Image 1: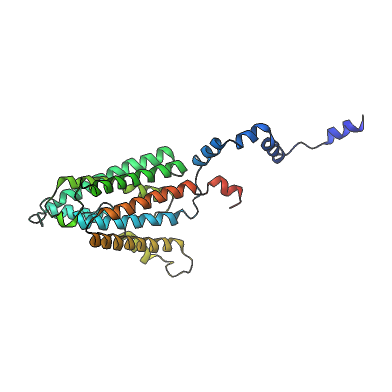
Image 2 (image 1 turned 60 degrees about the vertical axis):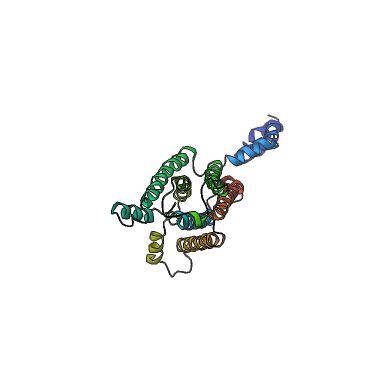
Length: 286
């Protein structure tokens, strides 16, 4: 037997890493990687990396504070915090304050129903298309931003009265349009916090957040990410409420906080568009 034959018999089989390198160096693989369309498709179909996404979700608290303080200033109802709306509905059923606000309970009932409807739709949308996918996140927040933007346009063009001096306690049924739409979009951000496994960042419920903060057994520990999320969520909601109330009082109109809230939701959608993917972080060992 010749030496060349012996050498061939004793050559080790190529490892999986060698096969992968050969595949990446092949012309077909090279052509695929060089196709911009393929890269963009892969990017937008990827799963985002969950690390630090809670920082983005904190801005949802800000949007909640802006919208709830603004809508309450104008229409005496909430679009996100349904505890207050439940109380208003109960007061209406007990005939309390029906003289000055005879149909105030109707606004709260509208908000409750539309919030529940939005939760139904957004939750099923996230389950159907996988909430961790980049396109799902972008589309969800673009829907929310578009709804808020549409409401801002209705108020800006005076289709719906947005001047505080002309909004009285007597119900004007056209006010139901922004209340219904804004309440419908609000659960979209809540669904995301559940899907991303950040239940402490509810973005709408402050009572349980404050309780969980105070009752945390690790409250005084130096490193406590869950406590930090609760604290900064409360702070962002408060900042949003102060900003919404101040802007509404200063301008006498409710459209400007809506524009700001729409920009926040659009900015979050943009953040998901450039957020690192799971595959990229695995490749870089993070």
